[in-house]
Length: 347
Image (tube, rainbow, N blue to C red):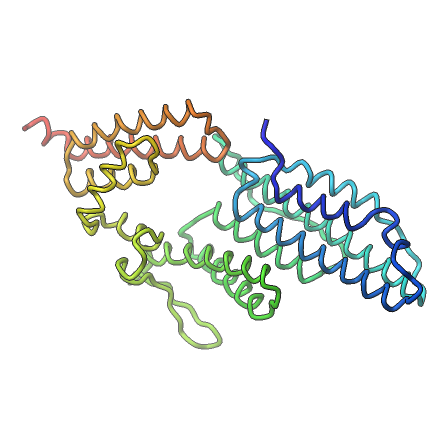
């Protein structure tokens, strides 16, 4: 049985520690102004904590390896705290109203995150159901942190629904601009780190798309200025950077021989990065065009796959990755034989 995610658990633990049923009365109201400010600090700090932790939960993919039952528990607990309060001109009542606003925003965020997780997990399941839309009704509260959480969830959604359609590219560009605007306004260091991670994710998706666009670039107007997105020369990036690896995957002839030798050596080790085997398959089918190398690589693939299963590395993401990886390796061999099989039999 999987453990509860540290990110989702930390939020309910922080809520329980900060907001006991008597938290409002426990403040020192001998100075109403000071009590109100202390209470607002508690509310603001928790709002920030919730969004940061849930963003880490989604962006790290931790929900795919661990449970997130505390999301539902916190949702139920939040609803228990909700109540109607008649507005009055006292700071204590004003603070109580701020707390109720926070609770409503919390329920919105929890529902948003739960839907995002549910949709993401469905992408990893075999025979996945096609989801045509995601519609949520929100409370009247439109706090800025809810908007940031929506940006994080949107970045996950576009990643798991990758497409080459023009409408998808436009959606990415819009999302990129929204994140950029949010970054400029954000002062909190942790939230800025989250937004930078989201921005980087979108940049990578756009960079990948640019490689298949006309003239290998995406052109768009921003404030009436023509701007472009395109990948730089692969050698201008660090060797293990996605943008460099992606371009060398498209044209495996650009892979250095010492890198190929290193990956070949790694393939014989116990702990292997499966993506290196995929690159070797691409190299063997497109550059060396050697069936013996391909068949040997298939043997290694089966060995490492069975070894991974024996180690019990099972979760919904690993299982999906394993299926996709094996399909790629065997389909690559099949495609190679369809194209060059006749020539091989002629030798």
